[in-house]
Length: 315
Image (cartoon, rainbow, N blue to C red; front, side):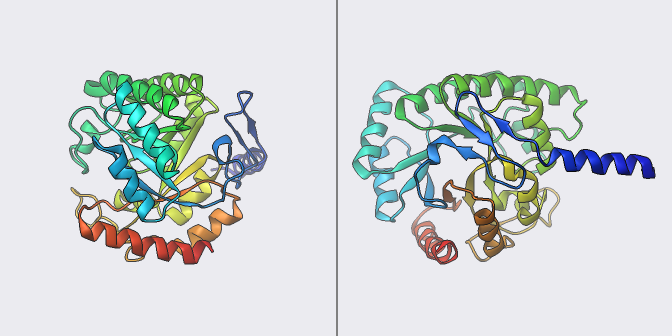
């Protein structure tokens, strides 16, 4: 880079740091850089309140009873059924246990393989073969979330191409614009789960989609598991968009065919003290949602330990 170009770059970069985006709809507004976004659903609530991501299967009452019994005030809800009857069951359970549903997590339909070889062909909205069906599924989920009073829909979008000139990138941006617009019409934010893409690629995608109801669910471990970024660094890039946090830990990948290994919180490479401190500096007001990708008694044990670990950091 020439010296003149470098000076122009620095001037542009400094100017960009002061840019703010304000939503006429009131869904969210982006404060100046290095400040987390203001999200309407967080108003008047405790910042960094803890939660649990949970699949509700066919029995929302049983799933949310677990969230309640573990002492969490919030939950991210993973659901696959969106019928009116199921909608009523979820609303009843949320009210019964007084759980704040911070987002509806959506995946599929179709096969998804969580690795470096088949993952790019099967995960999210990038693969052409399943894109249309998955977009329709997300729209159904948005309608379901609206009726249940859930303020955001979130999903893995897939291995977003690094090259913005790639036709697949442009196609994916177009479908994401349609989905974000659909969610906006339902009064919701559309959230990208971090993982398969680099942080700057995700920011580029959000800006190219161009709607003000987009946000990021910042999964701390996924960035490490996919070898994409250190979350301590990534938060500086993603800060203006972070609306949710997945508290999860993991190890860097060493096998080029497989993701890194997820481990209990505090046993991996995520620097939780620095992340929590930075979230406080950024005035982040959303939930911190624990995720542990195993099942059975060990999962419950690890979730309890993670809750105690994070409570000490958050204060």
